[in-house]
Image (cartoon, rainbow, N blue to C red; front, side):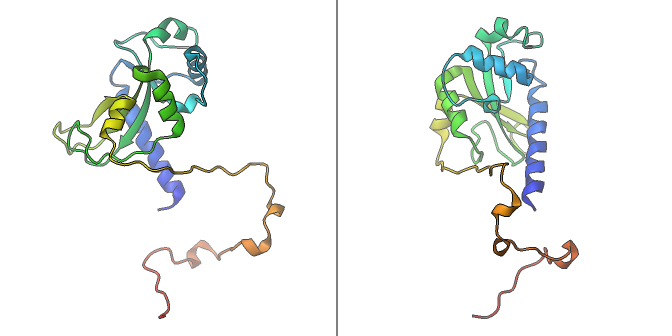
Length: 191
């Protein structure tokens, strides 16, 4: 599976998770301008961005939260970062749930305390409930459950680099896609 196929699958899984959470009227998917206003209203410094949370949640259902109404609802908002899996997870203990998180998510969760939570969404029906479910955890609760975590760099190359900045010796161009054996094991010559 290529990186792009996996990325597309992950995006689809995330959309499924959002759809599932939105069945609960306490959750809302807000617009980018509304997210920006929420970040302004938080009023704390940090490297937080609009991608540091996926949804907002209130204690009870409220009318749609927009850039016009967010100031009114802000005191009751919890920011929600979603982690979704299609893996079979047995129950609310979430044993074996594997997910990635950014330093920014952890920093925002630490700064906001109970006003920021992680929603662990299980899309698989092989569990004690017999249907998809979600568990909401604060950062403290996540850390209490964490067995191990490792640092991983997510790297984006600059967009202002031209092809002349890479020498021809650094490039390998393969034949037509049909010429490349992508299936089956690669046999190495005997040592």
